[in-house]
Length: 166
Length: 166
Image (cartoon, rainbow over all chains, first blue to last red; front, side):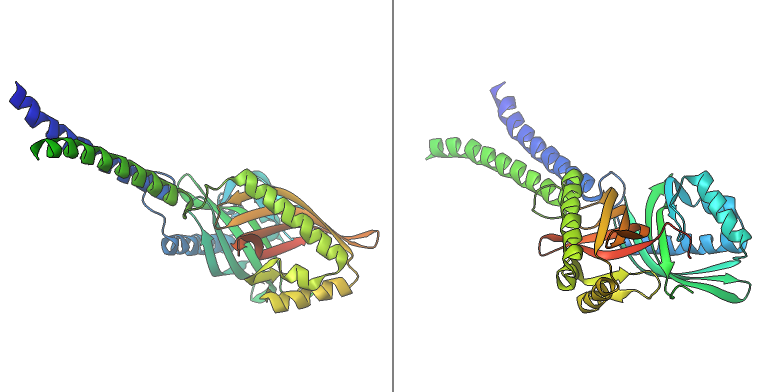
C-alpha cells in the first residue's frame, strides 16, 4: 500500500505540471487573438480587403445597389460628401442607387494602406469615379471595416475630393 | 543527508509550481494588451480623446499652427477636402496656418463614437467651423489616432461637408 502511494505521488505531480503547462498555453493563444480562432495576420487581411474592393468595383460597374448595400454592415454609416451621413443598409442602398442614377458607371479603388486587428480594420486609399469614359472625381478615402457573418464589410466609409471645389 | 533531500524535494516542487503559475499569468497579461502595460480600457481611451479634442479646439482658438501640427503623429496625413492629402508635421503646420489665415477662429468637435485598441483608435464625429460668430462649415469626420511618446495623436484625419456644394 505504501509502495503504491510512493509511485502514485510523483506521477500525480507530473500530471499536474503537464496540465498546468497546457492550460497556460491555451490561455496565451486565446488572449493573443481575442478568441479561439487562428491568429490575425495583417497581410492576409489586406489581401481580403483588396478582394472585397474588387468585388465592390464590379457591383458599381453592374449598377447593383442592393449588392453594394450588402457590402456594408447592418449598422454602417456611408459618410458621403455634401450630405449628412446615411445609416443602415436600406438608406445606403438608396444612396448607392442615387449615385448610379447620377451617371456613375465605374469606381477605381486604390488601397494605400491597412491597419488594425481582426475586430476592426482601417483602410486608407484613393479613388476615381467615372461617367462612361470621363473621370468625374478624384478622391481620397478612409474605410473602417468590420467582420459580419465572417466577411469583411464596410462599417464607416468617408471620402473627399482631391480637387478644389468648382 | 537523506532527510534533507526528502524535505528539499517537495519544497522545490512547490517553488516550481508557483513560478509556473506566475509566468503563466504574466504571459497572459502581456498577450492581452500586446505589451507589459495595464490592460486597455475603451472608456478611458474615449475620455483621453475627448481631452485631446478639447486641447485641439483651444489651439485653433489661439491660432497656434505649431501646437496643432504637434497634435499629429510624425507620419500623419491631414486629408483636407478640396486638395490632395498633406503628409508630415511641417506640411500639416502649413495647412493649419492656411486655415487660420483664411479666417477660421473656432472649431467645435463633437465626438460620436470611438473603437479600437491601445495601438489604433478610430473616432467618428461631427464638427463646425466658425469665422468669428458665423458658422461657415458643418462637417462629419473620421480620425485615426495612434500613440506617440505615450500620447494619443492624430494619424489620419479626414472630413467632408454635410451641406451640398454651393
